[in-house]
Length: 358
Image 1 (cartoon, rainbow, N blue to C red):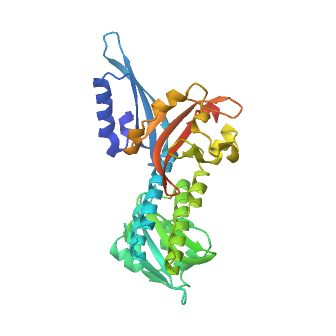
Image 2 (image 1 turned 90 degrees about the vertical axis):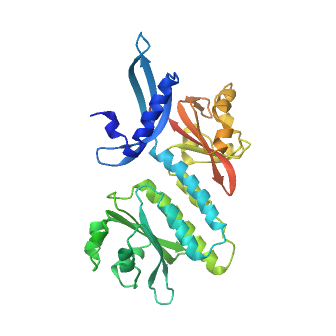
Image 3 (image 1 turned 120 degrees about the horizontal axis):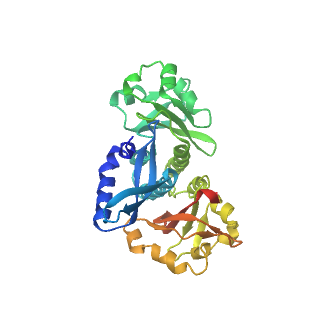
């Protein structure tokens, strides 16, 4: 098999162009991120560090690539952007209908999700009424536009927790013939606030057989935020983003994540960082992030962070090892980017440890 056959078709030309550019400009090594297709058809994000080897005549002899799966890290980056978008939704002053549509727009950014709908529940009769949908045919949306409390669909929402199934299982349970939609997977997500079911979402995929665990974590967070939006909107009180959902999401990640204010002081670190670097949450509070790296390496770390590039929306890489509280070094690859945290601009670091340090 040719390695290029594994690269996602949408990224193949970009990868080839980057290799040609780096060769032309005389690079001996370079890094780039792109998507690959696994044998099972799953899409994964990878970070490839390519080394260009030359023969005695100065011609390319061969390319050596070191590839690391960064799918989870990519989801962290994307979700921080989603959180920023969420903040824009909450501060937009739109009506509830517009908010539903915007929430669906970025819910479709989640891995394996390409369609969905939001329902409100009639508190007097218990009926489910579709308020907005994305990525579904009008015929399908009309077929599921409303249903009563005693239907199979309603029961899937009233379990108290999300239900994810192959669509073939759903199709067998529902009276209507919905196979024409071509769906492969579907999730039924209750939206609960103050222990009361107030709305629901269906999110599905036309391409993937299931919605993966990391995507489900993001969906749970969106459902929590949606419950808050609906409740606050009905009460006529200001809508404010709940940061706890994002903290909970970060704490499920294996990568080491630290959030800093723009002055470099740590304002949040996830469980993985506390575990591997042996710091308590109190230790890390307001610590200068440079203290996570070995003494004498401060300048190298700062040089690797291109602040102007970060402000423009780019990310930067740092290969300086991290240092534990008891001063042991852990080989790591840290990516820095700018996002939003608690409504303010923040510098975010995501570190992946070398395999032998895990």
